[in-house]
Amino acid sequence: MPAPTVDPGRRDPKTVASASTYLPADPVWVWRGGGWHAGVVESASTRAAMVTYRPVGCRGTCVDTFTAESMHARADRDPQLDRFNPDLRRPAA
Image 1 (cartoon, rainbow, N blue to C red):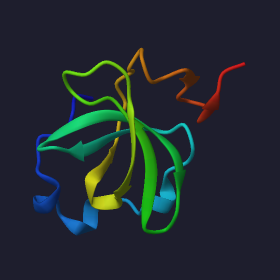
Image 2 (image 1 turned 120 degrees about the vertical axis):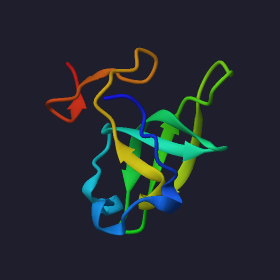
Image 3 (image 1 turned 90 degrees about the vertical axis):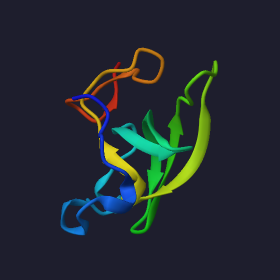
Image 4 (image 1 turned 90 degrees about the horizontal axis):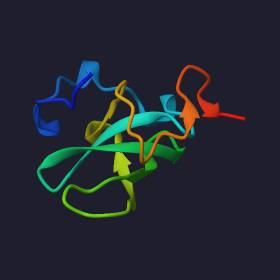
């Protein structure tokens, strides 16, 4: 699944999953700086999640907190971020 094409402010609130539905190591898209970026959930609460993500045009990663409206589940693998089996939702042995 490619990155979402909708601006988070235009998403139907009924389609936005609560931040608490995301588990550590879940692959997500996050909205930052006017675009969607591949990320991985580090931790989550009922209101927001801490995510490691890849900013465009940079080497390395960033870590930030995102509200549910600025997150979307991701199915595409990212070789830099995804070091786990997405079917198990936990690090691979």
